[in-house]
Image (cartoon, rainbow, N blue to C red; front, top):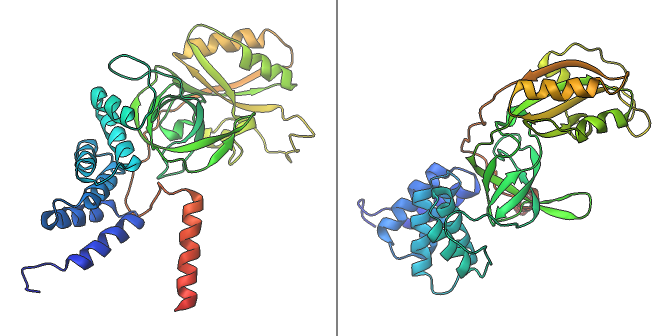
Length: 326
């Protein structure tokens, strides 16, 4: 081997290790170099396309996956799905439809964006960060509309359309059955609804259910976060006045202080909704209406966030086994 010829075997090993470690920029650079020497290798095109997918570099990912499809000796679902994800990110709907047809996926007829019903699932928002999970309705194999009211810190809103990965990374119970959990890749369309954080007190669950069932112009959806979010005190994070008492188990005692997320088009819409609710019962009180706009957490290299918890556990077990063998 001369000084002018790189050690391609070492670069190969380094590139795949970089993918495993979530070092996507390094992996992309190494696959660039490998493809300079092996431009007809479909696996290198696929792997560079994979690294670019998780960097949300859709044009490059589509290019590499289409080239991998062209060079492959047999049909590959993974190449077609990743190409379709990238084409969806670019809004190249003719290509998207051709790729899904090649996978024998039935789509609504027509041209342009797909607007079908592919069922309810769960999306993990910003999986490279805190990874809040919310329910979504899939309108095509990799696009979905958010059905819950996400926390403002997620940078998302009720009704956002997100692009999600093709491989599930877990399951959640939706009240009737287990549904898949998918990692978000990118928000494609922002919702018209803002997120309002509402702090109320109510004497009974029926009082809160009355608010959740109520409607008013400009209201998209209301959610009782006290019931669904338990990992920190939302009132403390917003500075809303209250005192901490020993908190009873909600299964045995009612908690009067409730934290709600309301998706609405304006503050006036929320005020109207709450005014009507307050008038409907003597034990109902409004403490505060807050709103907070937050950006999405930035993605950084160094963590393979696209892996399912089961995959990460397997990697840890393999590492532990290797240590024992050494």
